[in-house]
Length: 215
Image 1 (cartoon, rainbow, N blue to C red):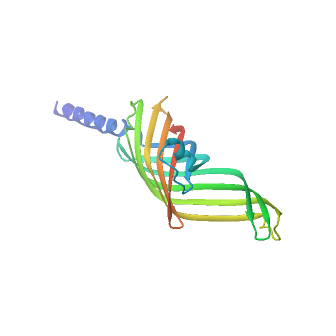
Image 2: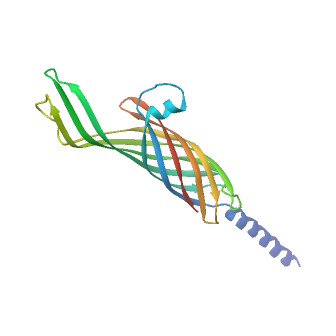
Image 3: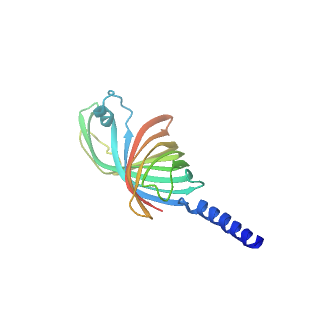
């Protein structure tokens, strides 16, 4: 009888530990669309319209992986790349007349970040708000191609000009995941304050995202 009771107790303890280990997801992977509003350094006002007018919209992707130490806390690694292509047209005075500069600008912005995510990772949770704090490195690059000049100019810049800068960056924000199956959530929204320090100045960028979370 004692052996039976002992066996029953061991079975119950084993079941408790098994449940404790499997009642939340240990890993998750996120992949989605990212829109980054890159700060131009202009501050024209406090309205929503001026907020977007003072920034340039970059579009691209974001990918992240999370290892959950507990039901609520996980370590997160995050990588994003966003891009903007536009025509650059400028007219300037050379001292002897007016010159026109035309080029195609290709710009890119990357973030490589790591930190902590707070989220209810219960297997039964359907609506899952989350918050994260991430720090790391930001890198931005600009390429000018197909440059042409006209007017009072004797020397036109090279048809290919490249410049880049790297500095400290972070992402502080969160969002909302919605469960659609045991293995997949939809990231309905994500919003991050994304400061980046380049050339001694801080960019106050804002990053938006939507996508899929695979568990």
